[in-house]
Picture 1 (spheres, one colour):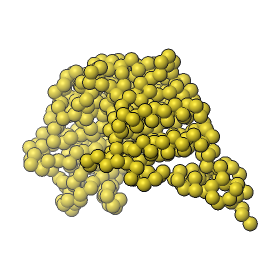
Picture 2 (cartoon, rainbow, N blue to C red):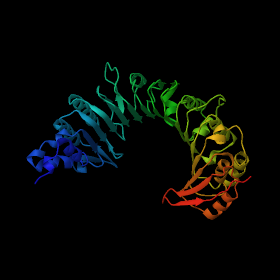
Picture 3 (tube, rainbow, N blue to C red):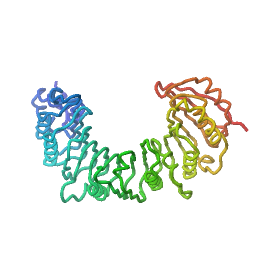
Picture 4 (cartoon, helix red, strand yellow):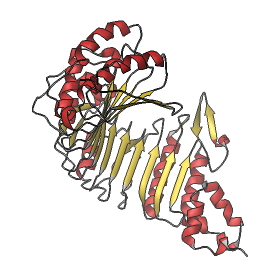
Length: 448
């Protein structure tokens, strides 16, 4: 008895959604009852690297790259035309080896217009690793998730907002100042926002972040931002729970960008989770930090630190952060691998600034119970000072986790650590290899 053919439509679609679109279409040959099942698929994931619609010969070789063939886009168009619609999810990804010619850009725009005719889409995910030219986004009234990578986009004429939009992610997107601000201003229900490397060199952005429903914010400042971002206006986010601020630059001397980073950090006062990736601390060390700044709800903090660029100003920025987080419970520190030609130079200032008792940190006195320190190689010169700082100052510490990718001379490292002064009687130290997940536990005892 053919039990599969008598399954409900919802279960059949659930099965087909777990295979490639090419395999889903082939199920039409199974039986008459399966002939048009695939046309009811709510999700369509197309990736040029996997090329589920044909062989890679559909991408014309151009040097070391591939030009997307019009025939491939035409097959995608015929595929979408056969779907009943509307779609819940539409993903169109092109690998780093593929790029478009002008003719293909027209086909992509016509494909988006076809999606609009089919009733729109709830999740739209477009990724182009080489910019395909300007794409005009149709007015998808039911759009809830919009993810764009490597696009040059423009909003439709008379655009009044994606009123159901909850997630917006834009990375390496060229968009005009007016369009970006209009999109943010009309997205009153936006919950998650990611902005990274957006704008154009000819049209510096002046971004106004005023989103009352926002819960997740990720903002990246790097070399392109210095040219692209002319003004950043930030207001308080009353519902914000998680924020990620990234500063990815090789030049740390820009006072303008340092003030921009400070403005972002001091505007996320309602978050419970904060990540400061790359070298935000180094950037903050360039400006005068306010002393009356607090994040009262913060429970988790992660920050990245380049040990090779440490100086007294960076430590002051780190101490300022700790003082502003009175109820911090969990802390994660990611240390960049030390340049061992500078290890001896770094050892003395690190010991002077860290390996001693410090006052004025309410979180270390009462609330911090878990600390994770991720490093490259275990060594007793450059990174031991950070471990000793928390063992010495975190009075309520219960677990100190040390992650590493190169064990180095672990016996010597453990020997130094066992001699460290420990304040918390409940403190336990655990090493874990980030490559093999091997765990080593170490007993440490509080000293009077």
